[in-house]
Image (cartoon, rainbow, N blue to C red; front, side):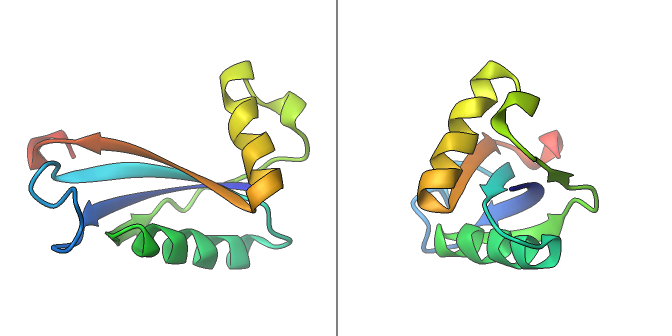
Length: 97
């Protein structure tokens, strides 16, 4: 399991286009290797209607859910069940970047 963090902006066709300037995105991905997880993180983010601006160079490999705070364990469990979980932390103005 990997936790990939990236920065994204909504695409014009996204429901968020006129509502937010962008988002910091955290994606838990249940995948065998890091490079594949990063590519999937980009793909899933774009499928949700966001353009990926950049991907944090640092990512986290998670061996089991007990490594995580209790509030993040639910994301881990969901990723195990569905393959991934996306958390969008949006902001309203470019000044917050």
